[in-house]
Amino acid sequence: MPSPQPPGELFDPGLQPERTRLSWQRTILALAVILLGVMRVVSVSVFLPLLALAAGVLVLIVAVRKRASLVDASLRTHRHLPGAAVLASSAGLVSLLAAFALWGVFA
View 1 (cartoon, rainbow, N blue to C red):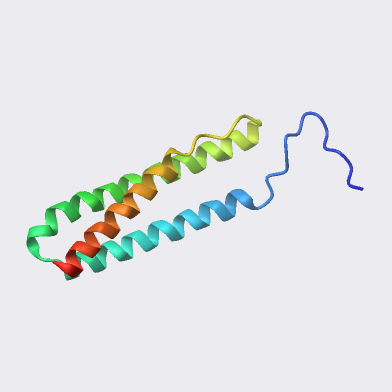
View 2: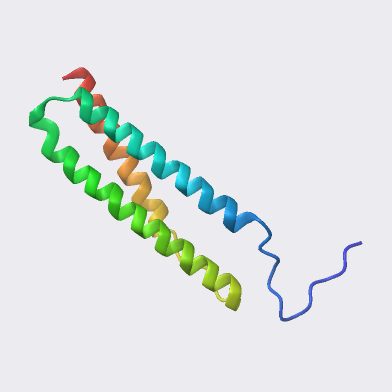
């Protein structure tokens, strides 16, 4: 039977924060590649919305890095983890990117 954790220690973070950070990096890389592919396929009239979408991806990159640093700080100081606003915004961004891709393919 494993021994209980000391009262001052919430949990052992292990490798989970690093795996999460790496998965976010892969997600952002995939978004960038998809965005470049869509920009190559669509016409010039769609370029400005795609440019705005690229700016959204850039904002997402900054937000993910900021959240990762907040998670690291929270784990070091044993505070509550930050909310999932980055996850919600990335889901919205991916949905928007998929809508633009479908529009570019079927238009």
